[in-house]
Length: 338
Image (cartoon, rainbow, N blue to C red; front, side, top):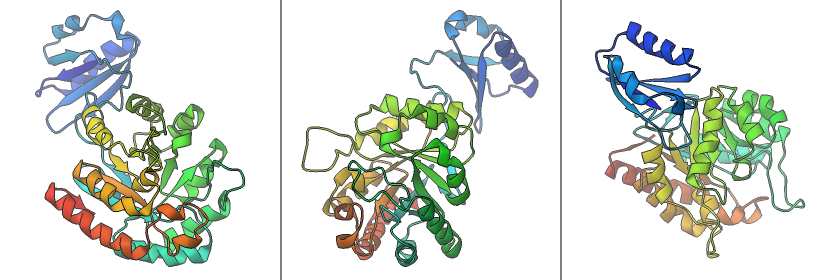
């Protein structure tokens, strides 16, 4: 249930209605806008008559929320959430580019690629230290060593880093070494992991599962917000369909749907959606035109020798050219490419 208060409501009146609801056993979620105060009521609201709340003179509107997700719901928080990743703001009017290799292969590799993507316009460095692979014989990542390499690059080049977490046991390592913790498509419904990530303040990048609906995706984000961590960025990376021309099918429509349903920022991963470097530019430009808050793109110095996903990695010069085009599209829709 959502309660919208009148513009002239006082702090004492807010406290009064909140205490009334808490006494009835409900959990309260506040949202303070520039001119609007909204109270989200979480619990079995079928036990309360919405009309009875109009007895309070400062209550403007009472609405039942039909969707199962509450805290990520735009009805609870009409204003866009802006997530601060070590000084880089994602959401609102910004478009942020994240770039880097699929996997951290060596310290030399990261030392070489980081300044290249940074100079091209990437504001956050990506790199996989732990690699969830379909085959157990594929490169599994450098694990803790890879995180340390990313951390060293973060310090040396003054750039935030993002990497994918696989296990609850590694949360402390990720808190120490990275600025943005990625939950991959395979772990989108790892609810035990999501609950633990809800207990920390580190920003979370939550990728959509390969066969999950938007509602299921938002419910996964709800787990994190319900735990107390509101720093969540959604990432559309394509879903599995019958089409075999691309690795996955990029659901561009999900951007518009998310913008309607949720206040959380959403970025797009064209690399995993396409599975081929030739398609990344078109998908990237389309994503920004559709309103995405950013992109996460795989970039590798020599994709031909990459230990992971070289076929979907851009070379640095192509990445640089793409960023220039992305900036023009962002400007055309009155957004700013950071």
